[in-house]
Length: 187
Image 1 (spheres, rainbow, N blue to C red):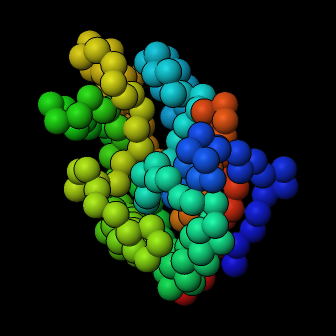
Image 2 (tube, rainbow, N blue to C red):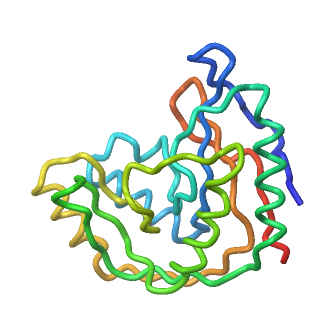
């Protein structure tokens, strides 16, 4: 089942008839607030533009006429997958390959990977820049000392929550990512 949120904004028309979308598992409260605060405290400029999430599909340009097809595909993916549990604990980094510090998944990574493979198919099929590794970013493209501080600040972070849906996000003209359609895991 999909649900369009009230007041959903689908305005990203930079490329003439295309939108920028992403698909992610949103991190629920109260954990989302702490993760956002960590990103703000690290000085990450995307802290208020990108809500805490586990990416299933990175930012991807989709033609306007394909949005309904994308939503249908995501509905089929959600119907074929069951809810699962995520546990987040501690931090890690992709350095030196990429200047990213993140919170690790202690449980649920295999479920995320299965979901990611299914999402990254059909109208959304693409080659990824890096192998898929589910995580929650807390600092991105900052200097080494700042990345180290961000990692230490969240090293004791722990969260456990059920994943019952994933969301389709659209980047607004203001650069903020908004989850506008939820897809319930119903298998």
